[in-house]
Length: 162
Image (cartoon, rainbow, N blue to C red; front, side):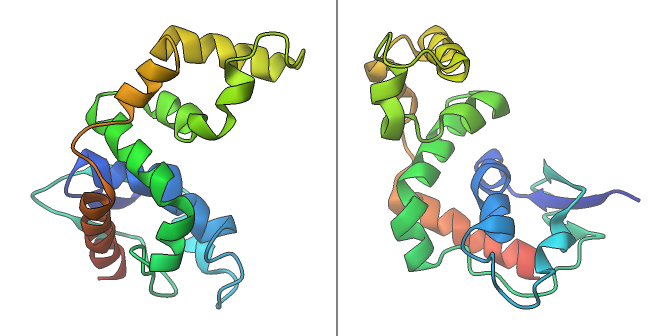
Protein backbone atom coordinates (compact mmCIF):
# COMPACT_ATOMS: atom_id res chain seq x y z
CA UNK A 1 0.00 0.00 0.00
CA UNK A 2 1.32 3.42 -0.97
CA UNK A 3 1.36 6.09 1.70
CA UNK A 4 -0.36 9.15 0.24
CA UNK A 5 -1.43 12.61 1.25
CA UNK A 6 -4.14 14.00 -1.01
CA UNK A 7 -4.49 17.76 -1.16
CA UNK A 8 -7.33 19.95 -2.41
CA UNK A 9 -5.28 21.68 -5.10
CA UNK A 10 -1.90 21.96 -6.81
CA UNK A 11 -0.89 24.94 -4.65
CA UNK A 12 -1.20 22.93 -1.43
CA UNK A 13 0.74 20.07 -3.00
CA UNK A 14 3.50 22.39 -4.22
CA UNK A 15 3.80 24.10 -0.82
CA UNK A 16 4.01 20.75 0.96
CA UNK A 17 6.43 19.18 -1.52
CA UNK A 18 8.76 22.14 -1.97
CA UNK A 19 8.79 23.79 1.45
CA UNK A 20 6.97 22.02 4.24
CA UNK A 21 8.57 18.59 3.84
CA UNK A 22 11.96 20.20 4.32
CA UNK A 23 10.73 22.19 7.29
CA UNK A 24 9.51 18.96 8.92
CA UNK A 25 12.81 17.12 8.52
CA UNK A 26 15.50 19.74 8.88
CA UNK A 27 13.90 23.13 9.32
CA UNK A 28 11.31 24.52 11.68
CA UNK A 29 10.56 21.14 13.30
CA UNK A 30 14.08 19.68 13.09
CA UNK A 31 14.54 19.28 16.85
CA UNK A 32 10.92 18.65 17.76
CA UNK A 33 9.80 15.71 19.83
CA UNK A 34 9.46 12.93 19.21
CA UNK A 35 12.80 13.20 17.43
CA UNK A 36 11.86 10.63 14.79
CA UNK A 37 8.61 12.41 13.85
CA UNK A 38 9.86 13.23 10.34
CA UNK A 39 10.06 9.52 9.46
CA UNK A 40 6.29 9.44 9.10
CA UNK A 41 6.78 11.39 5.87
CA UNK A 42 9.52 9.33 4.26
CA UNK A 43 8.50 7.39 1.17
CA UNK A 44 5.15 9.11 0.81
CA UNK A 45 3.44 10.28 -2.33
CA UNK A 46 1.50 13.51 -2.55
CA UNK A 47 -1.35 14.06 -4.94
CA UNK A 48 -4.23 16.40 -5.74
CA UNK A 49 -7.63 14.88 -5.08
CA UNK A 50 -10.21 17.51 -4.11
CA UNK A 51 -12.86 14.80 -3.75
CA UNK A 52 -10.89 12.95 -1.07
CA UNK A 53 -8.32 15.17 0.67
CA UNK A 54 -6.53 13.45 3.54
CA UNK A 55 -3.98 10.83 4.42
CA UNK A 56 -3.81 7.19 3.40
CA UNK A 57 -1.30 5.14 5.39
CA UNK A 58 0.49 8.25 6.73
CA UNK A 59 0.44 8.55 10.51
CA UNK A 60 2.28 11.62 11.81
CA UNK A 61 3.71 11.30 15.32
CA UNK A 62 2.91 14.94 16.17
CA UNK A 63 0.76 17.88 15.06
CA UNK A 64 2.08 20.62 12.76
CA UNK A 65 1.00 24.23 12.46
CA UNK A 66 2.13 25.05 8.94
CA UNK A 67 0.51 28.49 9.27
CA UNK A 68 2.85 29.44 12.13
CA UNK A 69 3.69 33.16 12.09
CA UNK A 70 7.35 32.61 12.91
CA UNK A 71 7.76 30.09 10.10
CA UNK A 72 5.97 32.41 7.68
CA UNK A 73 8.13 35.36 8.68
CA UNK A 74 11.21 33.38 7.64
CA UNK A 75 10.07 31.55 4.49
CA UNK A 76 6.79 33.25 3.58
CA UNK A 77 8.17 35.06 0.55
CA UNK A 78 9.54 31.80 -0.79
CA UNK A 79 6.17 30.10 -0.21
CA UNK A 80 4.41 32.88 -2.15
CA UNK A 81 6.91 32.28 -4.97
CA UNK A 82 6.18 28.54 -4.88
CA UNK A 83 2.44 29.16 -5.07
CA UNK A 84 2.75 31.54 -8.01
CA UNK A 85 5.20 29.31 -9.89
CA UNK A 86 2.81 26.36 -9.44
CA UNK A 87 -0.19 28.46 -10.46
CA UNK A 88 1.67 29.65 -13.54
CA UNK A 89 2.35 26.06 -14.63
CA UNK A 90 6.05 25.68 -13.90
CA UNK A 91 7.39 22.17 -13.35
CA UNK A 92 8.33 20.70 -9.99
CA UNK A 93 11.99 20.88 -11.02
CA UNK A 94 11.74 24.57 -11.88
CA UNK A 95 9.94 25.30 -8.62
CA UNK A 96 12.59 23.39 -6.67
CA UNK A 97 15.47 25.06 -8.49
CA UNK A 98 14.19 28.63 -8.46
CA UNK A 99 11.71 29.13 -5.61
CA UNK A 100 14.04 31.70 -4.04
CA UNK A 101 16.14 32.83 -7.01
CA UNK A 102 15.81 36.50 -6.10
CA UNK A 103 17.96 35.80 -3.01
CA UNK A 104 20.91 34.73 -5.16
CA UNK A 105 20.14 36.54 -8.42
CA UNK A 106 23.47 38.37 -8.17
CA UNK A 107 25.17 35.04 -8.84
CA UNK A 108 22.67 33.88 -11.44
CA UNK A 109 22.91 37.04 -13.47
CA UNK A 110 26.61 37.88 -13.24
CA UNK A 111 28.57 36.00 -15.84
CA UNK A 112 32.07 35.23 -14.72
CA UNK A 113 31.31 35.83 -11.04
CA UNK A 114 31.96 32.19 -10.43
CA UNK A 115 33.54 29.42 -12.45
CA UNK A 116 31.69 26.85 -10.39
CA UNK A 117 29.96 24.46 -12.81
CA UNK A 118 26.88 24.32 -10.60
CA UNK A 119 26.23 28.05 -10.93
CA UNK A 120 26.99 28.08 -14.65
CA UNK A 121 24.36 25.38 -15.24
CA UNK A 122 21.92 27.11 -12.91
CA UNK A 123 22.46 30.45 -14.71
CA UNK A 124 21.83 28.83 -18.10
CA UNK A 125 18.65 27.13 -16.84
CA UNK A 126 17.44 30.38 -15.25
CA UNK A 127 17.92 32.35 -18.47
CA UNK A 128 16.35 29.60 -20.58
CA UNK A 129 13.34 29.46 -18.25
CA UNK A 130 12.73 33.10 -17.35
CA UNK A 131 14.89 35.19 -19.71
CA UNK A 132 15.94 37.64 -17.03
CA UNK A 133 15.08 38.79 -13.53
CA UNK A 134 11.98 40.61 -14.76
CA UNK A 135 10.73 37.37 -16.33
CA UNK A 136 11.31 35.66 -13.00
CA UNK A 137 9.44 38.39 -11.14
CA UNK A 138 6.53 37.98 -13.53
CA UNK A 139 6.54 34.19 -13.02
CA UNK A 140 6.48 34.60 -9.25
CA UNK A 141 3.72 37.19 -9.36
CA UNK A 142 0.04 36.56 -9.65
CA UNK A 143 -2.97 35.92 -7.51
CA UNK A 144 -1.00 34.32 -4.68
CA UNK A 145 0.00 36.62 -1.86
CA UNK A 146 0.74 36.17 1.85
CA UNK A 147 -2.93 36.17 2.85
CA UNK A 148 -3.96 33.57 0.27
CA UNK A 149 -0.97 31.34 0.95
CA UNK A 150 -1.61 31.42 4.71
CA UNK A 151 -5.17 30.16 4.10
CA UNK A 152 -3.71 27.24 2.15
CA UNK A 153 -1.19 26.56 4.93
CA UNK A 154 -4.05 26.37 7.44
CA UNK A 155 -5.84 23.89 5.20
CA UNK A 156 -2.65 21.83 4.79
CA UNK A 157 -2.37 21.68 8.58
CA UNK A 158 -5.97 20.43 8.76
CA UNK A 159 -5.31 17.72 6.18
CA UNK A 160 -2.03 16.51 7.69
CA UNK A 161 -3.19 16.65 11.33
CA UNK A 162 -6.62 15.04 10.79
